[in-house]
Length: 271
Image (cartoon, rainbow, N blue to C red):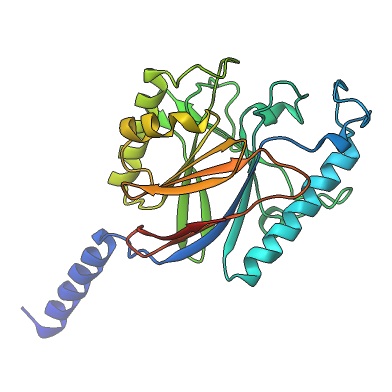
C-alpha cells in the first residue's frame, strides 16, 4: 500500500475514533433561583390577600428586575445563572397559567428582551411527569413523551457544558400526598437515559414538600441536585445529592450556588 494511502487511512481511523469518544466534560458553577409565588404587594388590591389577581405589569417588571439583579450577582461570583418559577401556595392566585408547572426563565442574551417590558423573552415549561399530548407539545414545553417513554429534558448550556433539568409536578392539592410511584418511575427512567447519554449534571425541581426528598432520591438514582420549597431555606448533601429547599419567596430572590467538577461531583451547594 502506498505510504500516502496508508496515512490517509490512519487519518480517517483517528477521526472516527475521535467522533466516537465520549465528550470531555468541564467544571461549571451556576446560580439557581426557585420562585414559588410573587409577593402580596403585587396583588391588584395589595391591602387584601383575598385579591384574585396580580397586577400584570408590576408583576412582569418585578420578575424582570429580580432576574437581572440575581444574574448580575451570579456573574460577579463567576457563575452562570438560571431561574425557575412554580406555583406552590394554593391560597394565592396563580401568577400565570404556566406558573402551575415549573417554568424556566430563559436568558434574554439568547432570545432577546421583550421590547415592551424589558423582561426576558418567552419561558420554557417543564412538566416532566405529565403527558401534554402531541397537540400541546412545542419547542418550549419539556414534558413526558410517551412515544419515547421518557421526559424531554431542558438544558442550560454554558461554555460548552450543559446542566440537565427535570421537574416533578404535583397534581393534587393535599399537602400530605406523596409523589405517585408511577411519576417517580417515569423520572427514574428519564434520569437513567440521561446518564447513558453521558449527562453527568442532573437537577430535579420538585413541587412536593421537602419531607418527601428522601423518598424521591431513593426511587430516582443519579440525581445530583433535588430542589424543593418550604417554610425555611435549607441545604444538605446526602449520598452525593444536594438537597436544597428554597423558602417561599418574598420580595427578593434567593440564589443557590452549585459548583460541579468535570465528573459531575458537587464541590459546593449553598445559598
